[in-house]
Image (cartoon, rainbow, N blue to C red):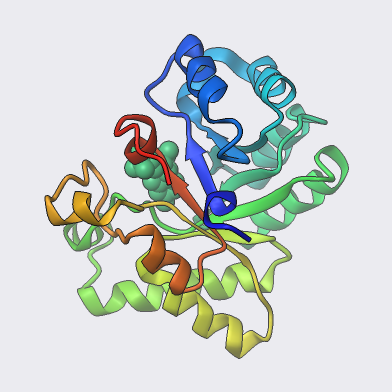
Length: 230
Ligand code: C5P
């Protein structure tokens, strides 16, 4: 698969008109775009259908669902038959939530792959200490547990920082199963060198993430604001 087919462009910080202008120019280059909370809250399911049909791109719907099992499963039912290739839920919602989400998705979104978000790539060691009182060493063990949990369910993939790819690959080997691995927190080498990484913390270049085993890379501002292409 060529590198650009592995890029999922995050359509953040844009209004509807700006999204259309961006896609008019780049729909030939990128196959998949990510619609997140910002655009979904503003423009809803019709916008998802419009972008998919008008530009022929696959949709990664990044709703990061995280609630009790019944609420998450009913939320998925409300998305019934939307043309969505990937949908995200938080792994920290726990096994019951993930199982019910998967069960509902089988009926309501049979062609959609469910991805479990581990921890946000904007969180660093200081945040883990502040929120969970984790020591540096405990962060790794917690990631391992989360990926173990993902592997024990039938979830199709995980969203993780490129720095955790080694941990998930280790767990995959132990359990003998593979997940789709999607990594946000991607910046071009010159952006990292000049510390132009905005709110992201656990980051890597596209080449490093692919080399470490990522199947897909989520890239937003580096492409949409930097106006960079591959
Ligand atoms: O602009 P940038 O490349 O930082 O955008 C990253 C995108 O990936 C954002 O849309 C953000 O919501 C998403 N994301 C993330 N970290 C996660 C999961 C999703 O940055 N763990």
